[in-house]
Amino acid sequence: MPTLQDVTLAHSRRLSEIYRMRDLRIAEAQALRDLQLRDLAAAAKAYQRYDDEVAEARAKQLATDARAESARNAGLLEAVARRTDRFADAQMTRRSADTEAVLGRRHAEDAAARAYDTALAELREARDRKTAAHEAERARREALDAARRTHDELLAASQQVYRQAIDGALVKERQESRDAERAYLDAVRLSEAATRTATSSASQALARTLEALPDAREVLRQWRAALKTISDDTRQAESDAFARFRRELDALRT
Image 1 (cartoon, one colour):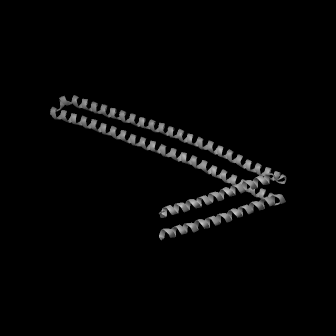
Image 2 (cartoon, rainbow, N blue to C red):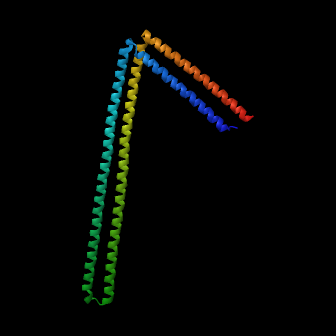
Image 3 (cartoon, helix red, strand yellow):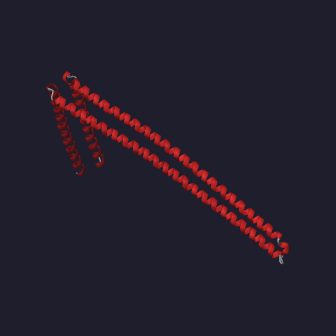
């Protein structure tokens, strides 16, 4: 016993086959029409003009697409090059900041050492040498700790700036790459639209010329009659398919 899913799937497949045969018959009718029309001596010039116009439109499209492709590739390469430059600038800035932090720590340590030595030299004149020595040592440790903290804070800030510069470089590269891709797609769409317009204009001009030729009019009449037959057959096949589908649904309900 078939299920509702089986019946629906079979109906969908029958409709797909109907439309496939319709499209195949239409393509065959059009191919026969074109073959017969091109065999007409009176239509030779019109078809030659049509072919030339279509070929020219296609050549323009290919040239436009090639230029757009070249511009896109150049844009992508430039985006990568600029990202590399930004990376290098960020690295140079970080190294400079790190060097300044190290030098600043060394200078602070040297200053602490000099202050400590001066304090030790003055111990002989102090009334309480033990307390003075303790204070000198405490001041030295505090100066060294302050130098270390300042050094670490500067290194952390330098690393933060570096990360932000790297992230910014990556974001800009993606933006520039997207801009290049967008410009390429816009150019391709415009070239496709121009080709369609040119082809449509050429087709309309060809159709007007053919309608003025008695032999061509007969071929076109036969082609339109064939299309009508295909359309009628398709509608009948659709009607039969849906009638069968309803019968199968009724059978499922009962």
